[in-house]
Amino acid sequence: MTGTESLKEQAGIAACQFITDGMALGLGTGSTVRYSIIEIARMIEQEGIEVAGVPTSEDTRQLAEMLGIPLLEIRDAGSLDLTIDGADEFDQNFDLIKGGGGALTREKIVALASEAMVVVADDSKQVSTLGAFPLPVEVDGMAWDSVRDGISDLCPGPVALRGGEDEPFVTDNRGYILDCSFGPTISNPLDLESRIRAIDGVVEAGLFVGICDAVVMASQDEVSTLVKPGGRLG
Ligand code: 5RP
Image 1: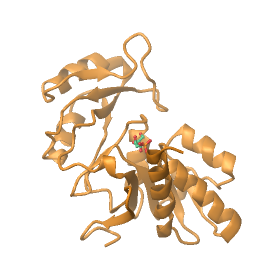
Image 2: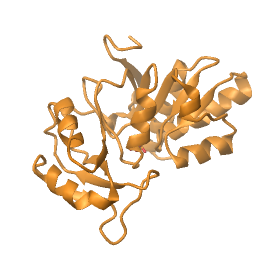
Image 3: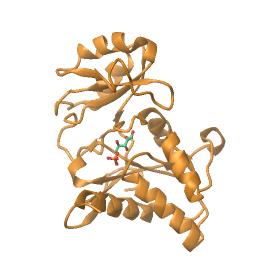
């Protein structure tokens, strides 16, 4: 296992400290939260906890099914107790860029349906200003080029169709993704999110503002749990 992979594993496992018996969980998507999902399966099998999860992507659904984690549909779950998910970037306000794996729309729906959200990350994801990671925006495939033009008016760098025109990446919702190179300039993510969402054809933007309550971050030296002051886990 590489150094980064080990950090992901440590963060993914440590985040399961927030899980208690009987919880309904949002199960995120990505290579870090994958370790949380494996740990949840272990807790079910070895500790006998009873939990159920709502997956945020078809990949996560397959993984959870393979591991024997009971699953729920979000419409049947009502409110979830906790979502654990990865992030591409997080800042000091616990605001996030997500969608590197293309699952941002379901990830946001599930996170917003949850009483609390914990992010798992290695320390490379911590930034002072969001935007070095190109912001993923899910769009209706029919309108991707007009949305690209609309976002280009807001974005100082290139706005690229993920996968390219010949073989666009297709999300679980049959949408496309635009990766928007803002650079580390997103000082008001709430304002940018509302401007992007106002463009016709946008399904969802990968800015998660005021949603995350804690980050479990692994670095070479330690795993730290950063809890948002005044957040739902504070
Ligand atoms: C998927 C996501 C992921 O959570 C994000 O890309 C982080 O993934 P990883 O843990 O693999 O770096 O938002 O849409």
